[in-house]
Length: 140
Image (tube, rainbow, N blue to C red):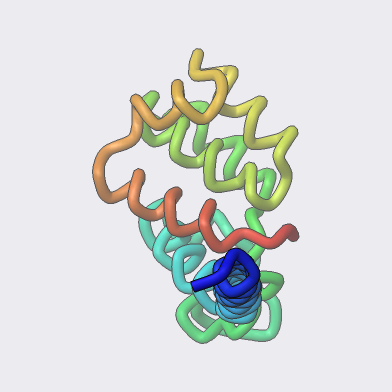
């Protein structure tokens, strides 16, 4: 084997790895909206559908787009005045995907700052939902 063959083999391997990475990223972002919507519906169910505005649908499970299920700011602001710290942090983290300043303000009000602080306050089901939202979020 010559040095030229080794170089060509390494070059081919690097190109193949790069193409595989690009495909993985393309596939991820092609599937991300559906994955985000599925996680968003779980969050809505856990928080309570009554705290969200539905557009063009009767039930949050019917949604085919995240914009059909938007947080109802008035209802959520009333709820966080009477909910537990854990519920408040979860609500804050979830609504931060819709509006990051609003969500972080809710978390701050409960004394939890940043992702790590919030993650320490979430239960396992909430943490799984947030992880799904985070890994599939492509912006609102």
